[in-house]
Image 1 (cartoon, rainbow, N blue to C red):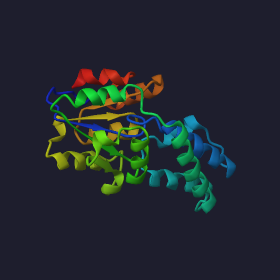
Image 2: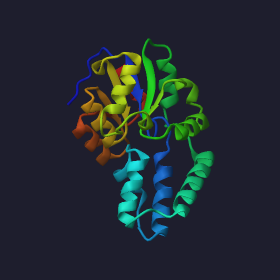
Image 3: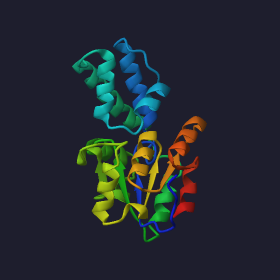
Length: 219
């Protein structure tokens, strides 16, 4: 297990599921659209399979199950419905605003490192009022050759700030994200309300919390 060292200089936040409560929305819509195409799927199944992974990897998995390229209607319907749901339903993760406010009163640097594309984060972080906390310090799997669970994105983020991996603290909610942080040699906090997911995150090397405001205890 990666140990916290008490010398954190940079806190690296995942986006979906850590800053914005978006994964339930996305997995619900995708499950419904997959089911329409004859691939019955559930929200919980897709959350387990896709959480924390780059969207292109998820599309490849769906196409493998479908047996070929997905119809254009799938992408059109999915993107439209997710955009509409974000507009009407999306909220910050409970407690994250308080954490970010406290971080502003410390010497710690912060950034976002997400498997999601920049265009998506611009929508979700602006919708939830979190963009200004990270403006100019937002990194995506689009910026590196390999997304999570590879360590590339976290290492890329640390190099931007000239901070050694051991002086970073990653905040993640997915197995892929925790694996990426551990592979990068970075201490990692796993956030989850789900008992089974929490056990999985812990098994991969995360210190697990179920209340985002507990994060301040690790600064």
